[in-house]
Length: 224
Image (cartoon, rainbow, N blue to C red; front, side, top):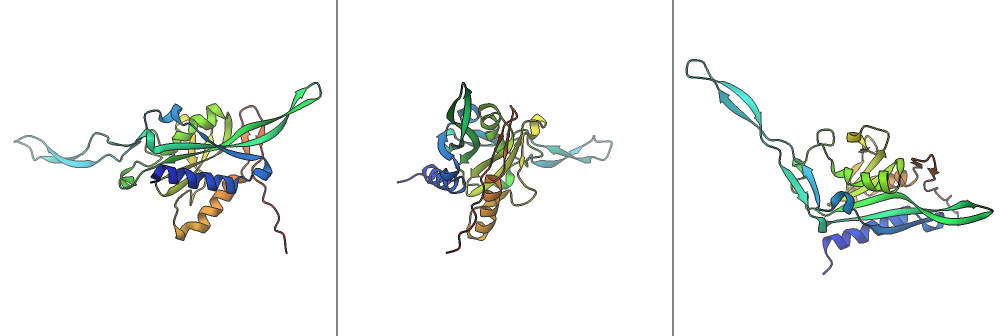
């Protein structure tokens, strides 16, 4: 019987192949995320607050708000997978010779989870490490991207991020857009998921060496 991870990988591969067409030089390959998730991925949960009465016998006790110790939700390593999208370029090797080189363009990470605790997960602004950060090493170190998008599938949600190597370390990953950057993949969101995926795929990639990787260019419609 096919596991949840295998189904998620099949879906992710099909989506990437669709939105990053081979006719424009793109290819899709599995990739390891062990550099960031060798022991799984830990998600910080919102701290619980409770009231404590403090004072002594002579004075009226006052209520104070106390935060509990942080708690975490862990996604095991065997529930995580990744894909890299590469684009082929013709590179001048000097002396009149050229070579085809496949350069990493973007990455997609998968986290299989039932999301029963998602409502308790800390927000991106409050968490020291966010779930989208699983893509930072792949984009910034392996692909040497300066600025470009990344994609995460967590449970039945798909999330679109923007990586910015020039920003503060805690803000390397940010939502790709103000709205609709995190969407459940159900029938009610098919149009929005398609629009977001197309926008991400069409985004040009800025590399740390100054090179610009061209995003997907939409083919003009053909009237039959």
